[in-house]
Length: 231
Image 1: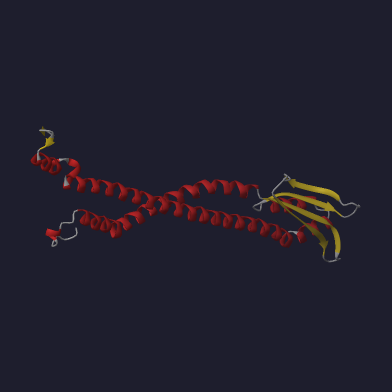
Image 2 (image 1 turned 90 degrees about the vertical axis):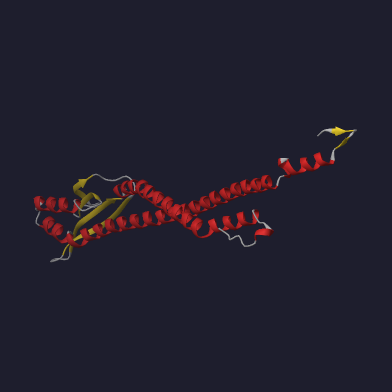
């Protein structure tokens, strides 16, 4: 500002207040718009973050339930196979043991060993005390196993000839479970991300864009243009 006799000229003061960017209405309005855009962007990203977060939590929960259900079904199948051996193989084994038919005895044991989850069979004879092991098939598991023992009774004479101990393992079930975890997590994560983007896009189209329009309308509000529609 030029100073005339120690005081600014009145016209210069008015010009300064009128044209300086700080006091310019358009400058203030544009600045408010920029701040509002930044605020809206932060709100949008925050909304997207919470949508993905909530979706991820439910995805992990759903994945855990699905994996537990698969694991329970596989273990139940193994237990059913163990029980099936007790129903279908005991009489033939007892008859083979009574007839001292070692070939037929081993054939029955090999058939039982082929059932899913069955890892080891141990056949004991009742002649001596303790019982004497006369046949073993498979590899005995060290952990994660299901063990069940069945008495071998020759029904015509109702005589106990020995016992069959069945060892089933959960090892393969756990291996399949580990393989499923990665596949299910990747699939569910991709699905969750796509659903979150769709929800965000729908929310933005139905609600957010209208809020932005209303905000911009009031930022540009002009009492002399009350007929201006909200776009």
